[in-house]
Length: 468
Image (cartoon, rainbow, N blue to C red; front, side, top):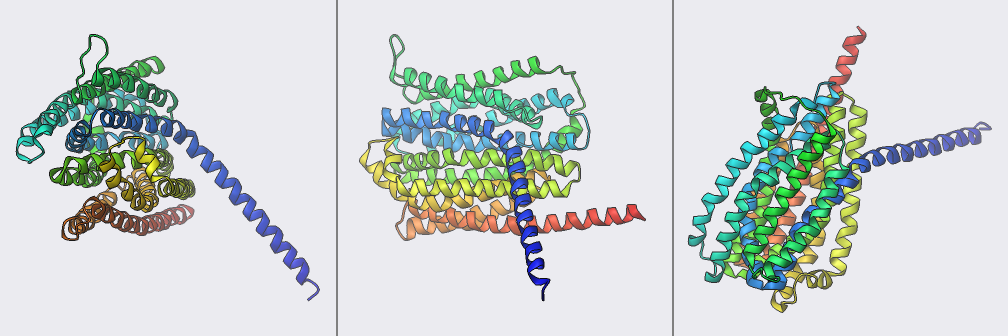
């Protein structure tokens, strides 16, 4: 009994030491993730602010202009996003190569070739969709600007994919500052071009929706060529021509994640197209709400990119401890930010919607959706950070399967039923989207735990075998 106080003191000291060590670990790994994520956050916010600038200028021009570009981007971006998803496999694949002590720099030219092949395919895909607009029963005044916007957007694919590929290439080497500074600068360039081309200035006439498309075209090529110049200035490359093995690796990782992104993206934009056939104001409302949520989404997306790089390196080096710590700390950071974001959306919905439009009907439709969006935010942050972990581990099929189950077996059927059978319109679709996010997060968390446990068993077996 006399030893009990001493034992308690010892346990208390051990607990304090354990907590301090845990806090120290958290600070270290969070700092490592933020070192990559902060510039990407800046760049991602810049990238979405380019889109937000389009919505802002279009909304100020007219509700019809906003509705037209909302429908046009909903269709064309569904196609272009598939290619972007494939390109997103560049950084986790090259990070794994670096973790395995293999050369990664030699894949510079193959990365560009991969992006340009995809650009040709996706451009043709967008152009083939243009004649279909005549048969989708949109309001007559929207048909012409939708088609014109899509045609110009199709030819901007090469600039967009060049920028995306080079940004991913540099990210694999944890070079993230300048690429994202370029994106931030492009926000102001795009906004200036939008204002001039949409409303007219001096000898330049008012071009409406076409002006928005020309501005986006110019900015995308500017961003791509600046990064190309920066890469040549930063590194020396040799023209490595054995593309086949590299392309297979990109497709193996990128195809499931690209399909997963496409499944989610089409689900969101399907709402704009379906409701746009009821009235253009619903398409405008969906675009406005998606623009708001995408601004906050850029932070966990950047954390997800950082997780993919760090987990990819740890996975290539077979370092389970580092992999787990980067994964779980990254999850906590992403969800924590989105919880704060959801409070802001629920507290100031009228103010946020009012930033983009003064149309009373559009405001009345959009504001109630932001309350549902506040709940969606938390699960959206969780699912994108989980996707980053699976990208780093090169286990991307589960992301595709979870997204398909969540969005197409749950979200769209539930949303469609609530929207039209129960007359909830766009609000019904957002209840469906929340259901999807909860379900796919649950699936991915269960599978992640299984993968990590299996990986631990395999590494323990290898260690025991080596000892013998």
